[in-house]
Length: 338
Image 1 (tube, rainbow, N blue to C red):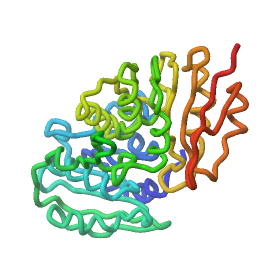
Image 2 (cartoon, rainbow, N blue to C red):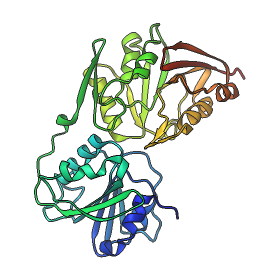
Image 3 (tube, helix red, strand yellow):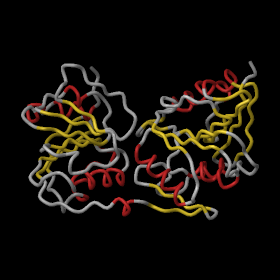
């Protein structure tokens, strides 16, 4: 079993958790939560992840919602939180979780030094005094006892942007939270003509691309997918704020998509946490053939320095760069005729 450096740090202290009821949350990267021996374990998954328990793991349950409640953490006295790369996302998640955990619960936070995990001491100073338990391989494990609680109000964490009279709502950790991405704006600028039929927005994030398309083509049938719960809630909030309708689904790329569409749009990520990774874009390209109708179109934006010509040639009969600027370019590709 291969564990991340953060999980290995937790494993060095596994005896601590043997007689505890442990709630896992945050940026869970591997199978550690289902292998760590505890009295009882609940795993909080906030994005599509392939964690499955076996028959031997009868004391393990999964929770697949963005927000926790009093009932969610009832009976749990220990939190192991994996710090993500985004500080505002960590703050949002921890404020939600800690507002419902009982006083005197033991809180463990683990993360890589480059992710800003050490700022947890300052961020949570009114809740808990964190002390270093261990560090290795540029990761740190901290712990402390919860001594204070505050009321969690979801609306306080939404950030609102306005672009061409569109209202864009996003929660921390969602792509485009700090500002609307310039690449997304370039892709949105190509929606100048009426677009008809069924449209799939892969990795919808805040919902910016979808509402930009609906503004020009309100009769489109929009399906919006993302693997992060915070993105799905943000997209729905953006739809509601602009009085548009669309279907919002949890899906890791096409994992939960079973229909065919006239067009697929996307601003795919090229990072996996802190590492550059092009696998998502490749999967969007190669698997689009299963989800596009005859003469269907894939339209996506990418950085100028990246080329996907080699991959597009394998799937599409024609593809073009329909718009570009100094930093970004928009690909338009049409499905091969069979």
